[in-house]
Image 1 (cartoon, rainbow, N blue to C red):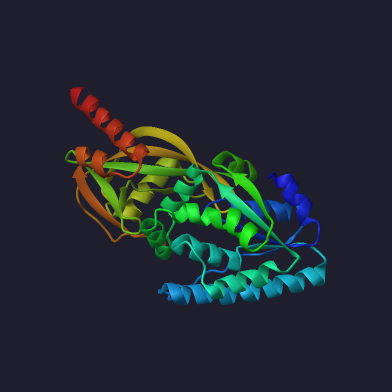
Image 2 (cartoon, rainbow, N blue to C red; image 1 turned 60 degrees about the horizontal axis):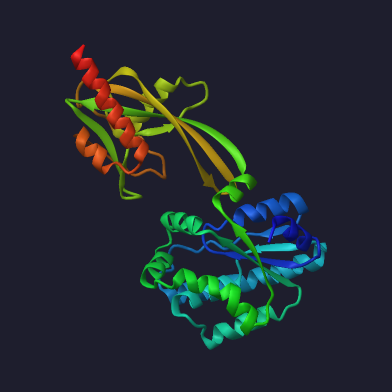
Length: 330
């Protein structure tokens, strides 16, 4: 189903339930609908961190989705515009079905009550396997991850709920839109960012960062500030993230670009990498942002190539090795 057809549904004064697997592109599609048709939007609820047990999480979502549907129906009557709900009770039902392969009697009743409302239209965003794999890699919800890893049929069952269970057991028409990485990128706003990174060498060893948040190793890097020279940005980021201050600039090593989704945007980021020599192990306290949790380590370049998480970081280290070899020959 094309987005154009969804636009036609959106102008018919309906309550649109936008459903789909994590990372399928629901936020991107809902944002595009709002821009193109002016529908009223109700975002998905954000679960509080103190909820741990699956039963309490499920009950909380059921309550929140019930409130959102009531708000949505009121807005529908009040504004005479279509309303889009990103996720609904159907998400909770799909999770239950994906986990256990069936629905409890309570969930069947709640699902039937929701589907009996003829003002409701269900749109299922079905992603490609590549999108699903990317979404799982980026998922931070331990409850969901555990369910996916415990049940090898989880993704198949989740898909089955919307494509077979809802139409057959609950006589609900489900409109499906297929998404892939390219189609979503074409809908997202394009943002261009520039960052600087530092390769810091000391006695044939290199400074890397252990990212405690993601449990992997990276090189120090960050955004260039307004009117900041890239080389200076790299130096500042190294000092802030590693604490090492006795730096001597050597040369620019490399630059590369990659892109990634961020909410309703596709971010195109260019990284400029600079080589520094560390003259001593003099350090000061790290200056980290709220989302950062780094521990700096000095390791051999051979070890760095093995344990760094990103392939581009590995390439950068190899280029640093080549430069050091050339310098020693000269």
